[in-house]
Image 1 (cartoon, rainbow, N blue to C red):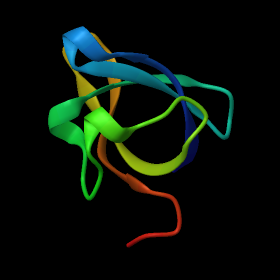
Image 2 (image 1 turned 60 degrees about the vertical axis):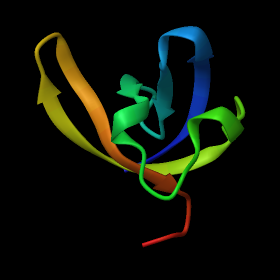
Image 3 (image 1 turned 90 degrees about the horizontal axis):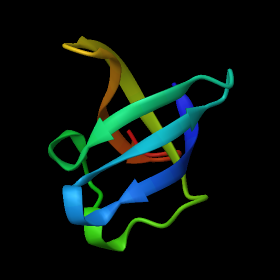
Image 4 (image 1 turned 30 degrees about the vertical axis):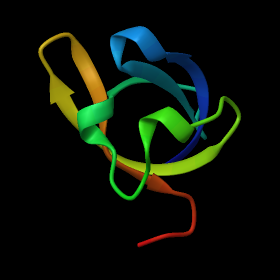
Length: 68
């Protein structure tokens, strides 16, 4: 899936991605792939996979848009 970093909560190590379909998806810094959480910026385009977490869908394998 593709999306944009919508919001970062740096002191807690997580954030939210707005998916291309408009869905807002939680992600944790442990789910990043080829990205450094400290260098992420709101509005940055990313690709990700979805998995079902304890509290609903969450993004995993979050990577730069266009990267494989």
